[in-house]
Length: 308
Image (cartoon, rainbow, N blue to C red; front, side, top):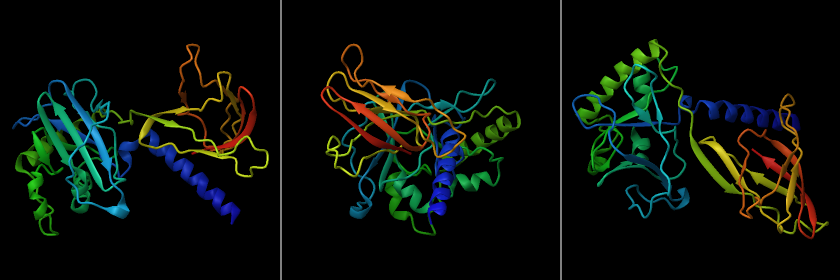
């Protein structure tokens, strides 16, 4: 049983590693490219900001279309799709669906566009895959959406049409959205042939707090595991290590799952010279069960950092 478990963990690590560097290839993730609402295919102009929101719990599911209470402080950092010689289209990082109420929100000036993704995945999960049948999909193209103020579905129809999404009606698509997508796909094919499609790495930065086991300073405590779960959605992973007084220091000895991966021990001081807490970049640290020695102002402890 143990060899099978180790094999499973090995395969999971390899899968996460592969997905992290090319998330645009994951068939369950989708990118979104916003364009001008015009008969001609034009990149979205002006100062605009894109936000990705997820809310709710599956065991207390509520229908999509909930009001937006607040937006994150920072939007998504989109990346260009094509190299030199092609229009400056941009797309969001690749995203999947984890929670029941999921939206992409675009702000430009006084106009706001909300795209309801929860409804999209109920009936239109094949939207990109259908296009891939006609394209060279060594790279998956993004969903193309003309920017319009209001609440929409990823097929360009108004969210008011959501009641029409029966098995017979879920292949409907807004005429202009279909036309712009067709123009975009022709450009995509040309860029693929000229090797001008830029791999869409996920550029989101994630920050999290390391939670230590309760009673870690007590010698009789048998459970000394602290978990850090990195998301494949995030290109940069920053972790805040808790401080036990001003002189706190952590020493991590890396024991990776993959024996060919070697990393020198890492020493962490949670407080910078100015006294502020400093996050630690663990993006490229190997997955594994790593022994940690923590020395605080008045005490010390050891625990296992389970980095995934």
